[in-house]
Image (cartoon, rainbow, N blue to C red; front, side):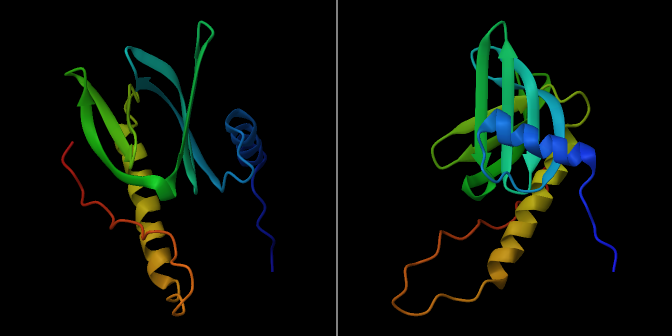
Length: 151
């Protein structure tokens, strides 16, 4: 049987995720995108998506912004609009809300990737065997996959 090996680009992107975001195991790198995160102003950078994380990194005029969102902590995400005209994606954890915009025509593609990762996590969790009585409870279940939302 043939051995499947990650491409050089994928290996480099995985290493970049490990370095930029101090991740011991970033999971399988999927894709990265040019976008901006909304703070007081939009900060342009790159979003990196792996099988385990959504990460963002920006370095504008020496102002560094780094966001690391483990997918298991994402409680919701939805398509939205930032600043009236900028299509965006809002990603929420139990404690934070992040708005990413300026995807330059790739917002729907990013949303599809996040939706598919959510479905995979949901089904993987459903396949786990139940915990035996008296054992520590497993982490809270992944919320159900979101329904498709209008743009």
